[in-house]
Image 1: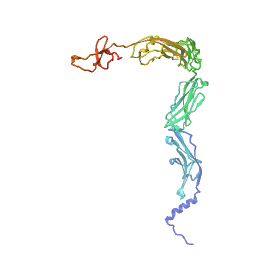
Image 2 (image 1 turned 90 degrees about the vertical axis):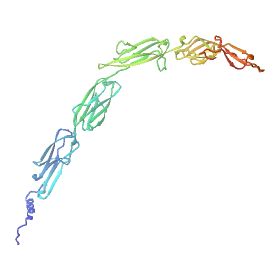
Image 3 (image 1 turned 180 degrees about the vertical axis):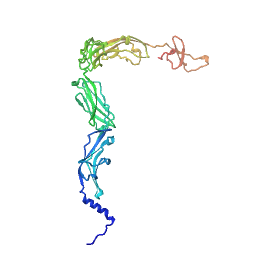
Image 4 (image 1 turned 135 degrees about the vertical axis):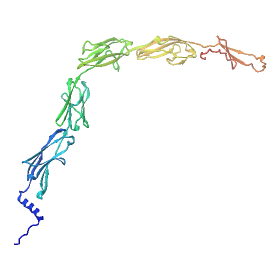
Length: 461
């Protein structure tokens, strides 16, 4: 046997490692690593605990447990105990919402020349939230009439994440169908509240906002009421008329009524008691044509008086009538002047008015300018007619002839001026004015009469 000489120093380190490996028990990997479940929601600004358990694994002196946020190491500790339990406390922030937290063991066998071994747990996702301490702002009507609808709005600011909040709007025991809109940290829910007869009386509208297992709630009072009327009726009216219409001389009853607790007043006269109708009776005349009747209804709801008004206009049918004050009985005009015959007739329906000459049956215009002629003189029957009858009014028209004094003078030959001629004498026409005796010479043909000069302002004939 050949004896071995001393070993070089370079061989000592591998040899020692080999001897240690051969002398130590074999390493064991952990059987299980698990991060304890997180709370469903964690309020921002408060601490939460990460808890990790590692079962098995050896040697423990080389086994570490790490707690991580994503890839960020929050804590690293040696595994102690069986199973080993490692914890750390984290302050929740908005940035933690949706972040993944996990646990990882590491068995470091590099000193034995075997490397670093590790394994991670299933990650857990954190949900962080902010629910403000102030209640939502709820906007509702104070009163709501049966059969009507109105929008209600609920707003809450400072909510995070607003998109994950749950909102419930309710009227009494009825849940309202709400439309929710978020913008940043603000949530707005809108719904339509409809009042039914079953809900009449004092009710509450509730807005509840829930996030992270916590809630904020606001309640507002709402009074649902029934306000029937006012309803107005007019008796004695003619059928198939769009508006209340009666004949002259008809006895008319105008009534106004409303609900059981409603006080009505008709043309300033109140009914005897709430719930009773108000009555007004009249004998229709032409003066009542176009007359309006007003009814006011008052209902007290929760200390507040609600008012509602209605009116109706009466139409009275009556025969035509020509008012002498609006149609002159005697007219005196000059011929060839522009005049207007002003004559009006009243009645319902509006009558047709014509003025006819009693002899020639010629019609003279009414209300429009016309030129007066001499043959217009005479008596006119002005007749107003409608479906309710007719009325005739006599108008006498006197037309004065504008007849100027005319003189035709044939002048002889003016010998004094030295004119001698065998031709016919020159003829001149003089206009003579009766009052002023002023003449104008107009050269013209023989036989044209003289016309007097007109005073200033007198129309030409």
